[in-house]
Length: 239
Ligand SMILES: Nc1nc2c(c(=O)[nH]1)N[C@H]1C(S)=C(S)[C@@H](COP(=O)(O)O)O[C@H]1N2
Ligand SMILES: [Mo]
Image 1 (cartoon, protein in one colour):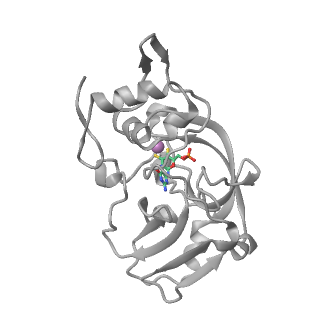
Image 2: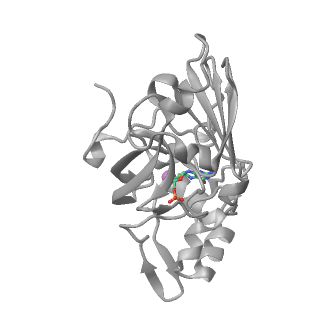
Image 3: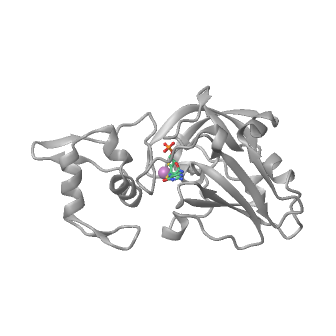
């Protein structure tokens, strides 16, 4: 059994694999902290138990990830988004105010860097560009930092990436409010990039001069520019 480094620097080895086998194949196991982190380190893996191969990871639907192993739950009425940093007009916005802003609909495949993909997911939300403009960013701003109310996950985008029409602050997924599991009430959706850019449980956006503090997965070796690659049949990267 190979020993690999977990994201916190501790080795993952036989113990975790045995633990996974004990869980068997369930939806839950892929939402668990160890499994989610391991999948992100190793890519999709087969699950085995004493009777042999139980199966590969399911495809065609979302897997729920949370690096904390928890799914934080916040009612829309208790949710706020703070927008600040190098801006002339920092603000805090509630859920109803967000819904009152002009909205956009996007239908796109959702692609995790570990290989799974969900075709034709419908999202609704507010263009991140509109959220940015409302804060009156100063000339020095070149990047954005995002924080989750899970207390752990962070992400970044350059200002240019953040201003794209297909980058939104989303509050509906497939025609329904975004569930707590999927990062509701409000998450980021960065259509042209791998799923790890689409931070769940969004609570704060900070406009900064470069370089931004790297996001959770970027600190662990992932590309900061996470354009979905040609190997996956599409590239939304600028030419
Ligand atoms: N707060 C938070 N956001 C996150 C993650 C996470 O663990 N925590 N995982 C990311 C990754 S790697 C992917 S592929 C997507 C998965 O979204 P889903 O859990 O709704 O399927 O969320 C992204 N945003
Ligand atoms: Mo992912």
